Length: 167
Image 1 (tube, rainbow, N blue to C red):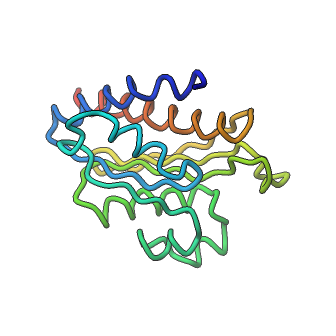
Image 2 (cartoon, helix red, strand yellow):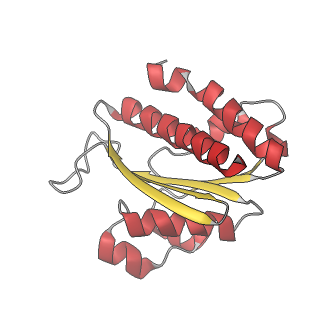
């Protein structure tokens, strides 16, 4: 297990604690992580009290069909883009019974990169308190490292956003 994935249980527990204090549920929409974030969440006993559902929307068709991402957005910007991760985040909220969502879409590699979107490029989206925030990151390393770093950053940032929502 690499360093990033070894942190996932503690990060998921921090998210769980903050969600439960508010009585909120979480939904995830994952592309490049293929369910790794949802798996980290549901590894915790009692996660059904705060984890509502996870969407694995690996293909563009899945993004459109499962969570309502507009195919025109996908065609215009590509799956790994700010408009698409924003739509994934909003789609997770719309298609779940959750008050909080996180979404990730990226290029885990080793192939699939381009000069403007190199391997390791990931877009993140979070919806907390009705506000959607997005961020772009690039991670170095092999496929497993990029996926684990993506899961870690998504949960770490969500824990911080939930803490901010408490104040």
